[in-house]
Length: 160
Image (cartoon, rainbow, N blue to C red):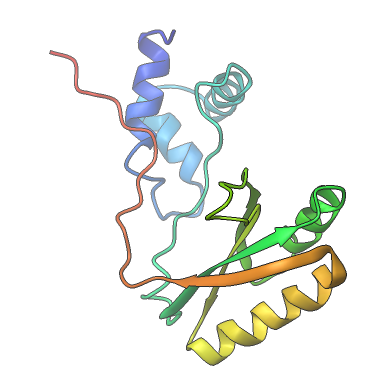
């Protein structure tokens, strides 16, 4: 459950943070509260599971990264946590996660999104991941994006 103040905070942030030097201070001022109080309330919302995170959702195409590939890997279950953590920490991997396999058609359990200016750059980055995974990887593939999807976070319905 969220109260009226929680709702105000979520509604103020659901369109994104303002692009100013002190975005939380500006949002707090608009809500008539102190920046520290806003940050405390956001931490509370996170600890209660109402929000998971506040993160940037860049448009990779506008950043010149027009080749985007979800690399998929069949990694030995005994090593997936350690290797997934290592892959997720690579500077060119924007998100990395484990998912259950859907056998027999989908043997992959590790996913890592890679962006590049062209497919050659993405393939070089995929080769780097492959070298790290080594013998723990039994199969791999890459799914290239064909279009950018609209990215949005939490959205509350307007009351009324």
